[in-house]
Image (tube, rainbow, N blue to C red; front, side):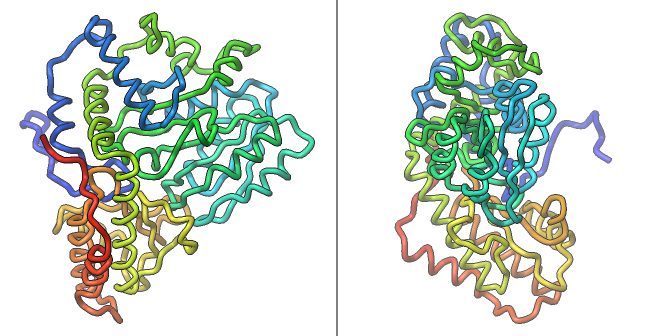
Length: 404
């Protein structure tokens, strides 16, 4: 047991999980700067800069763009409870645990929710959404751009087209994708988009960036009932992040400092460069894993989320023990599956500051050592690292944001 009176000394881990990711020393330094009050004139002016950087990363001109003081799940709840009222109808595409969470939260608003399911490891079919909405007045179509529980990415544009046909809003969960996967809120005409700070942006957990367009602003002004949640009610919290800076709650000031610096790093690298770095590193990871005889969970390459790679645990290998050895012997953390996939898959995150070439090679080497020790057969020693290194040799490197 850790002595609660001892100085805090957590272990240094290589976070290759689906979140949180590793954090740049620049972000740690920002978080350790002087504390100021949340209504201090300096801070309220600083908030405007945070919003502007968020707009650049979301690629939007939306006025209501700010970080909610909550986890990514708080982002889901904010999007859903502000959009829906009792008696409304909505469609949610469910292809994993977090898209199912959107549906669960939506059902608590008193609205009628139509779930459009897809097999785990695949995306929902826009045609199924179209059929589910026929003859109904659908308020919104919701989906997870990156489904963290399975490592699936969903193409947004076909669902925008269907939402237009239904006269519905499009609500997108970009928790696992923002900053690491191409996303353009304005061009793709996403009405509500939310994310989390602890993944491809590589800030600490605890904030959920959100952006909503003028169509949603009008909808909020014309609601017939109060928003179900006081805390997540955009009609009030947006006043704190608006011109008035009207007090709403005490936000986590150091986390906002950290987010600001993390976004500066993303934008210094450039969004396109960040997307390419995530793509390159996942490609090398996949080549290495397949060379080791490890099978990908998401079969269609176009459906693979660049920030989270899910793989089947090799037959005969105790997945929990293998992850424990990675952690205890190499200080590398990866994740297991969730729900019905708990004992079937591993999930490897290459997000933000964690998505580096050296980390890919280190992980493959450590995993190979453990699997050989645990008796995995038909694996050629060194094959994984060799395959990944060969992939890297064929592309120009895109380094993560530089230190200053």
